Length: 313
Ligand code: FO1
Image (cartoon, rainbow, N blue to C red; front, top):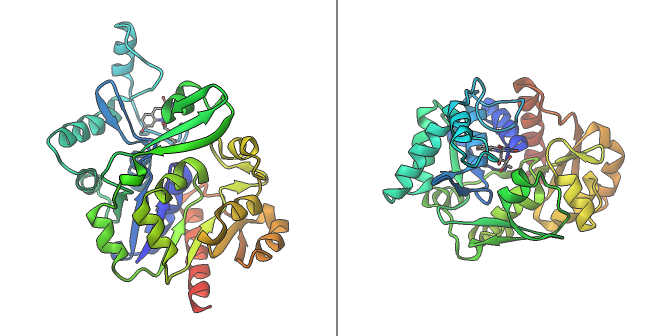
């Protein structure tokens, strides 16, 4: 089994590549839920939905969230009635939030709800939230503490960040579905090119996930989310600069330290390979920009090759 840790767009695109080259029984995608929040009475899970829509081929590539072919009657009506519109919920997307919210209210587990939804979207590979328990990312900024979506969407990542808290993570457990997988035969873990601070760190803050990785007998391979000194998408590079972390592929490698055994970095960052190798890491340089499914699959193949090399030593 290959276990991929994924956040938003970068994670979803690599998940598509891995799903193209691995059969369903060999891939589990674990998704960040630190971005989840309650809005207008609905339970919203942005990263789960980005991964789900992307695997189903229904994602909106222009926005990076929500569904393609979306309509906005609900938002327009909400605006006309004086409702809150800073967080945009499309009509088709809304159906998922309504179903999920109702199922959670009946006491169903997020992992079970996610399995049902992904199956209904025709996705054969397993997508599992990092926990069924509530974890909420809080961003520490020069304007005080902000709930993640307030920072990300309402404030468009403008405040300078000084740190993060993952509320609830210490008491969060792995979903049963993930427990069964990590207790089985894991060949490798893939850290997708997702934001290290707000996509991957919340998962590592769940004690059972961190301890499982610390005791590992399999390699962890990561794809750098930083290409040419900038994030492919989102605020990762801005956050790194604000936190005093070098916004480069080698800066990310130093940030993850012993948690990652092998790195896949972009060919635009070939000059970084030596610095990462000097940390004792295996390094593969390739084209990491996943602009279509074929490129996602090619990157997935490279990641699996590096994992194979790393496990052979
Ligand atoms: N991101 C935005 O920048 N603006 C939005 O209005 C917005 C709405 C939205 C609705 C559903 C959903 O699943 C995601 C949505 N996102 C929106 C994206 C999301 O909040 C962030 O991209 C992720 O949390 C970061 O990974």
